[in-house]
Amino acid sequence: MTPTEALHQHQQLCDELHALSLEENSFLQQHRRAPGPELADRKRQLLERLDAVLGALRTAPKGALGEPSLRQALDATRARVLQILQLERENEQLLLRVSLGAHRVATPAPTLPPGMLQKIYQRHGGTP
Image 1 (cartoon, rainbow, N blue to C red):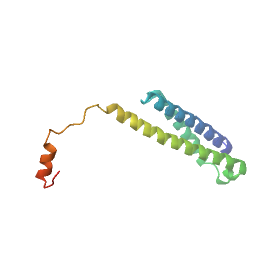
Image 2 (image 1 turned 90 degrees about the vertical axis):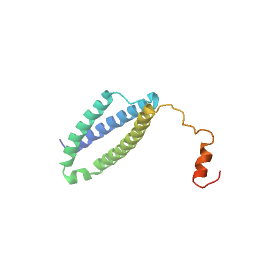
Image 3 (image 1 turned 45 degrees about the horizontal axis):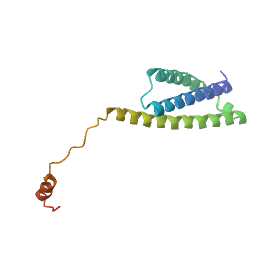
Image 4 (image 1 turned 135 degrees about the vertical axis):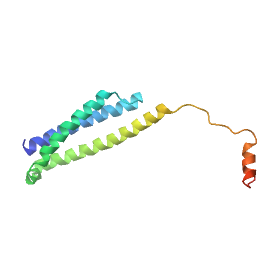
């Protein structure tokens, strides 16, 4: 695989990962629950393919990626990767909120018996 082919495959996979991250983000915002395992499987498959393409990019000669046309493609890919990372961070925060919200139990806050607060202040030398 030539460096140009590897870079174009890398771009395509990054675009697919970005679309999948957007899909996950929309799901989390609309349904307020974690998506099913099929989304995680799709992401895992894309990441495995990305790992293979990155291996091809690592073996490319250093000078091959210095061409102006490839340099622009590389810069665009880096920008896409940053977008993916930002989306994934937002998705993690949404997942955390969703998972914490699911475990919350609506229990009223405990109340102190009448006069208890005053007794506590008196015990510790303060006056209410």
